[in-house]
Amino acid sequence: MKKLFFITMMMISASLFALDFERESELQNGCDHNDGKACLELGSMYHVGDGVLQSFSRARALYEQACNLGNSKGCTSLGYMYENGHAGTNLPKAAELYERACVNGDASGCESLAMLYENGKGVSEDMQKAVDYYDRACNGGDSSSCAHLGLLYEQDGNMEYAVTYYQNSCDAGGASECVHLGSMYYVGGAVEQNEERAILFFKKACELGDETGCKNYEKIKSSYYAQ
Image (tube, rainbow, N blue to C red; front, side):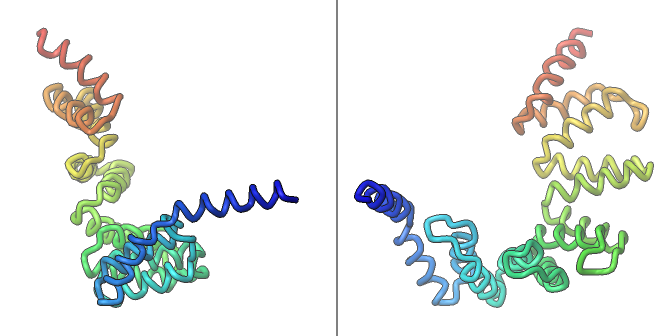
């Protein structure tokens, strides 16, 4: 019994050492003084149990406070909770919050709303609205939305738009889209073959840490400049 008690106390002590009371207190103070970013960060701590004991109810309240204080990411985070059952599943409410976040400039809110429209969850399925919101997210620097639009247009046979959105994704840090563009220009067919452009895209992918991009860049660079 004593051994079990000792182990239990050790586990409790370990969990307490993982708590970040100073950070929690600082953010709570900021949130109490209407700092929406502080409310968002504290909400995130409670959402995932980072430095505090996880509490979905506290996270929801803090995200809501952040959202009401004009922090668009707070609206997106709250929408995520409603979409994924962390605040009780309510897809229409999630869509409403994503819309609010998107209007106020959060690209991830635009992307999340686009996904709801694409799949008809919480809203009526509407591909045109989905494309419009993906485009807003892409313009806001969301590389995954740019990539998804590129894929949709490529599947539809519109290579001009596909290349444009893949380019946007690559520029925003989407390494796999840089590789895809490099492959497209190296092989040709869907686009006019252009080894020089292929090299540039593979190089960009490599700089972003993509191993395939690095391998392709070294291989093609050697053969291209040897000519």
